[in-house]
Image (cartoon, rainbow, N blue to C red):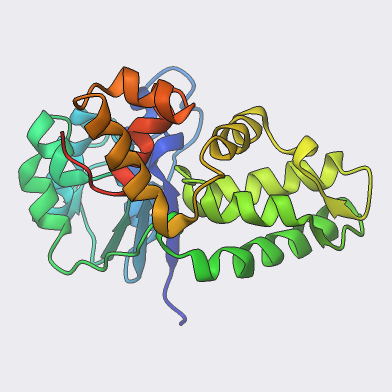
Amino acid sequence: ESQPYIPVDCGAIPKELASSEFFGHVKGSFTGAVTDKTGHFEAANGGTLFLDEVGNLSYEVQVQLLRALQERKIKPVGSSQEITVDIRVIAATNEDLTEAVKRGDFREDLYHRLNEFCIKVPKLSERTQDIMIFANHFLAEANDDLEKDVEGFDRDVIDLFKEYEWPGNLREMKNIIKRSVLLARSNTITLDVLPPEMQEASREGNALSGFSKADEEQAIRQALEKVNYNKSKAAILLDIDRKTLYNKLKLYNIDL
């Protein structure tokens, strides 16, 4: 517990500053380097470096990161002296890195280096039983931060939260709830204070409201069969747009 823990949001580091952020720099090594800077690797020496959203790193930075992980040595920008580091690296991402490797967006050797021990956390949309636990937690946080007293969520909002895909997972939920608390005009969160993309998802979801969740997949399959698996015609038949249909096909693993 006494060892350093350094969390790093990889998506927030500009590519041109990545070397300095990770490995530090010496005074005068580039314009604006008015003092020596300790990088994240050196700061985490003897402890843990947490790389959040590691999939957002540029390819060039991935090369530098791999070298540091393999050699356990770093060299600050502008310095000729190497620094030995002893750190534990934990990496997290909401991207599918195996697909990123196939696309050439993520180095395969770095992927295997980071993937020595993997814990896969199901995305939020797959954990419907936990959604309102997190939502109520973020509501309490937002009330404290904004000095508000919003008591809960309308039934329609709860239903939408459980159906929504949550592409940004917990970070998206936290931001949406804080925004909604700020805009709330009553003691509960209502649909009208949610972001436009969620309100649109609510309207799209209503198109299949005649079906229970258990029957929705069957309804989609029947519609596709009726129109000879033409997605555009199936969407019209179901009274939803193509994007919603594609999301439903993915949800139910319907391959065409």
